[in-house]
Image 1 (cartoon, helix red, strand yellow):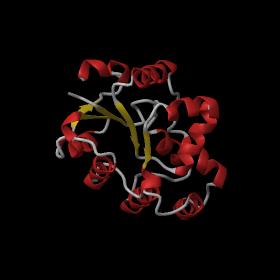
Image 2 (spheres, one colour; image 1 turned 135 degrees about the horizontal axis):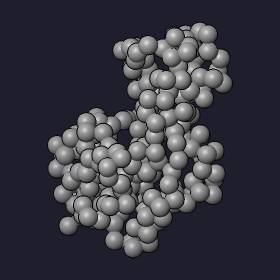
Image 3 (cartoon, helix red, strand yellow; image 1 turned 90 degrees about the horizontal axis):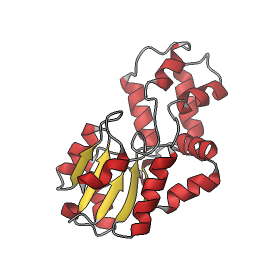
Length: 200
């Protein structure tokens, strides 16, 4: 029996345009994500460096882009958070049948942008749904590393077999499944988190 629901944020609750940042940066000389950039993005998602240091480091790769354009490009991935999804998770919380946890790979700049786009009243509606609200940059860990799932299970005394994890990235759900967690690898555009009850 499922007692715990762990939800991803991007493309599960909030819509994303994942190629948007790369597209926005092409005019500034971006061609591909190099190993250096990939490593930089990951340490930023783990909160190992602050936003200003992150922006400074990216600027070294793209010296022609100014700070505001860089932030705009970085945040262009973030789209809307449909009201029906917010109402759905609010309803889940009101039923009080499941422990609800958010587990998101994200970063300070993105979360500040989300708050601005949603407005604080609506953002707090969203945050208050969850018993626990985990953001990778505050945890110093990120998916798909097994340590993040092990931490969430142990910290909250969750039984993996009583837990379902919903994420759109196969590497993340595969990692959770290896620990015995039930998973739903949500296919963006074909499935929606509002169908979750059919998976429980």
